[in-house]
Image (cartoon, rainbow, N blue to C red):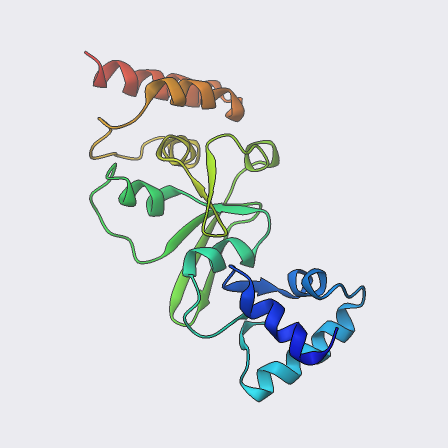
Length: 192
């Protein structure tokens, strides 16, 4: 693929954030070294933006949620980020919270990406996770359960919009009796 076509293939993609592996696949190149050489050329020329090692964007106006799920793979946006967006909590949190295989805080361009570890069986189960604009995002019910999984004493401000049928459908993913008891207690309190 010629240099002009390789750049065009990135610019035409609906994604705003790419890993080196994504670009190798897009360019049909087996060698990631050849990909890196071309990427450096495009970055130095100003045609692409290097976010950090192994992560690139078309420009500085990339989707931060998309980036959040590309830093550590597999991962999906959840916890306070989804709960606040869906109105289950009223506080605004600046960091983006992501479910992943490791617990880490990573700062990129003054934005904090806070990863929380979930066990692999939970992380890899796609129930309750939607793909929106090249980003994996938990539904409010999945984010609700993820939060209880990592913090059983977490306070939710407004859970009236929660679909309890969906909650009880997702609950077996976690295989956690303490969590199941906590969810049942919240459900009974909410539905008195």
